[in-house]
Length: 202
Image 1 (cartoon, rainbow, N blue to C red):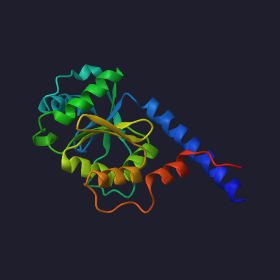
Image 2: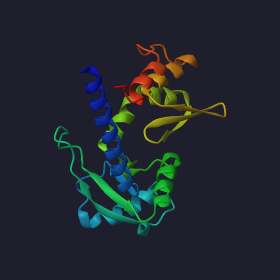
Image 3: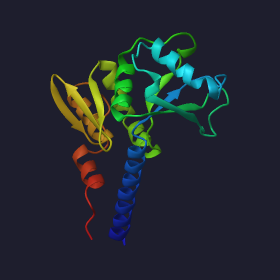
């Protein structure tokens, strides 16, 4: 019985991962603008985006994007938080260029001061990334560079070497090995990866 349940759980996890991947691929050209005031009306969004790119010193014409619409927000968020604005780039490399440039660009000012440019990702992928938040916070605090890999893993560059982290527990153990974390996970990452990544036996 236990083996049957484990098999079903593994199949469900696999299907959920495939669904998340399908969503992420279909949205791969999308960007979200978070923090755009609701006072900016739909007909004014195109001009607003142009001003945002200019204020952020991003030399990318707005003709490369379609301003789609505002995205419904979760019900638990207060009314004071504006809905995200969805953009769709005509080309994937343009979207990636905007994301890269926005991380190193001049801080926007005025009405754009609180606006963030984000990738448009599935809920499942966002949840997986949130699970890594203790690791990524420590990496940012110590100035260690990282980026996200597929499906949801951390690619960390330290002292010119690439380290691939597959689970949050593995990330915590790695930080501990580097002298950056004090609280290890309850079980070693190798055991965690074996449970999560291997198909159960029947």
